[in-house]
Image (cartoon, rainbow, N blue to C red; front, side, top):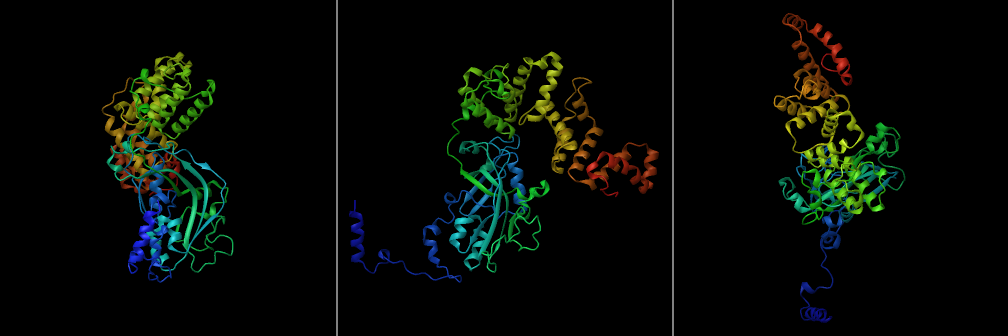
Length: 512
């Protein structure tokens, strides 16, 4: 086994002048910083930007727009990225807009009690090893001799509902082209990084005001930051919001081939062929393995990962075959129905829930009540392809909730308005008591609900202008002429309606 080595040594003895056999590396010139350019020939240099060595990168390069986009994406779907060298690109289009969470999603945050951590960068090797995504903007400065100091605090983490993403599932989406990894989890907290060339980081304490209650003006300004280190020790809910920015990703490679559990998640859209598992597990004597799958299914359902939930429910059925959830009498069928809806199998989910309710106490109230209950589940959980009626009702429900309870953005309000207006003429109410359809077909009610949604989104000036138009459209021609000629009177009469209808905009708007 030693023969090739001996031959190589012999070859060097024959050709002593050959640079290929030099036992001492040739010295390269030094940079202005004093660092040798030979760093690139070392293991650290050659592997400086290999994603295989940096699967938990800090995202110090992201600005507020990047952060907002990531958080918006992660609110519904697993984030898939292209990670090559020192560059990481979020593939925003690598998701199914019609079925949120198709490839998985993220569980609610798990909050932890952390402590202030620090990172110091004094040369390129440390930059590559500790902050590989910072190479693009910091590499030149570090090679010039500049040092950097970073402080960060981890307040919690979010993890994906899936352990793996498979190549075959991404190949059908052009937006996933070039995908290499997915974000399996990410840390929440705050960080700040800046030049440390003129700073003594050995004196103790925080350079960037950690735990100073937001009073960071007395501390040094950071070149890059995420969240606010100054509030990371506060118990105030408002301040804690500054300590939950994504700061570090945990990446996993996209696996080649198909998901081995894919067949289990492709149940046909018929109730009889469905294996179910789900809610009210306390009523069923589960073994430990079955209970673990049930709890995982519930967590994935709460995270709106319908397909992941279905896969867990199928595993539950294998671990506990005595409680087959194909039986509509099983309380487990409720969760299965919801997960079918989340996975884009709306009709199958509705059928399963209907049969389950027929065997429950609610059946005593009659068919109309059963239909209304199933429809309410549909409005909350259904995604993907739906009938015109279901699509209209879901859009009306979402607009109503955004108008009264949950704050959305202007784009959301406009999208729901567009959907309702496009379907209202196509869908006929079942009867006079089909209240939701009748409301969605009433232009005045739809307009009012849209303005309420806009007000909660903070678009008070626009709502003020639209409310004045709405008021004028509801009075007779004579009164309209009067108010148009008396803008102060118009503002006065509209102000009372405006403040009452839109409490979030009270005292605001163009007429203040």
